[in-house]
Length: 447
Image (cartoon, rainbow, N blue to C red; front, side):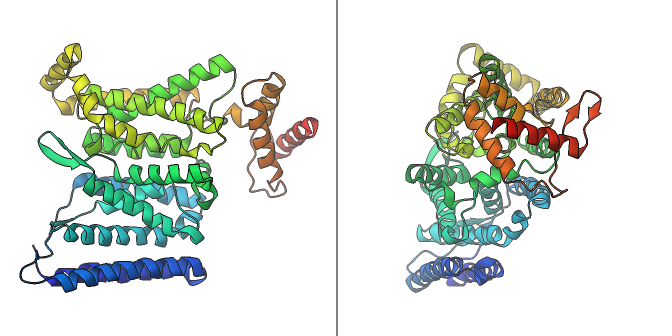
């Protein structure tokens, strides 16, 4: 453990890394981004200088300790695999890599300086990686507004350090750090009408480009579920959201999420955003309630956002902090009456065995989704013909969704063979020219 002013050498070194990563990226050609990195670095260096000048024999030293937490590096490895596969199909992900890594350096520096300013010991580990990876799986700011990316990260750190309560005799943070920053910024963007400052909508759309990404997310999720027993969170969220979307389709004759039953970005959220073991219930029934409320919350948030003409990609983000606040209540409810007896029976069976049983149930549900085409398979809601017929029948939001699909069709370069088009006829798959002919006839007929 280091307790001298020499400990400030580490944040100083990381500030150099921060600047280097920033100027390896587009900051070399974008003045706004360059000034963002220069300004943030100046603030961090100024903070370090103040701490250095204040340090003395009568002031607390800058203590730190290395504390590697398995949940942090396992989650980071899983998230990295998602980035690697997604980026192969949308190369903007790879171009964003220096900016993402610079946020990791920023979080380390900010966390260290804030901790030392409060006279506490800085716990150095791998916690910065899953926070930054999780945040950037759902939102990036455009280069001209990238300063707000660092503000979003800082809000997550501030929430982790200052908004705390006691659980099980231990003081811990209330909110998932990445979800808290994402939610605060999302609400600010919604109320100011500035969603266009981010890549949020493009991120949600392009995550649907890689084939079989549902399967990869599912397999990566199994790793997290095996080590940290969060299976019931994902299982119950997917089950609840699936049931609600099926009920919506049964009642209205159309699909809530337009071209999917569970959007890939939402599927990612219920695996890698809301499953933080530190901010979710510890009891199994509490986890079931938490996951079910997340699935129901995403369903309701999507409907409300669309009703107020707000981009729907916020649906998976704004629910998590509310549920984090409910976590102790859900655990208390899970200990009452018959529910409490279930918890005692589960303890007798052994938590490890029970988690494997829950994982088996989740595997069975996901395989059923795959086999029935509920996920992965080409979705009829992605076709112009479906929404044209729905519009004729005055189905909810059918005209709005048809316009959206037509706009996407008009922006496509149909002469490019790389533009994939798929279609099925009575005798099997159709040739590309046949599909294009049908599509063009449908669009012409609508116009």
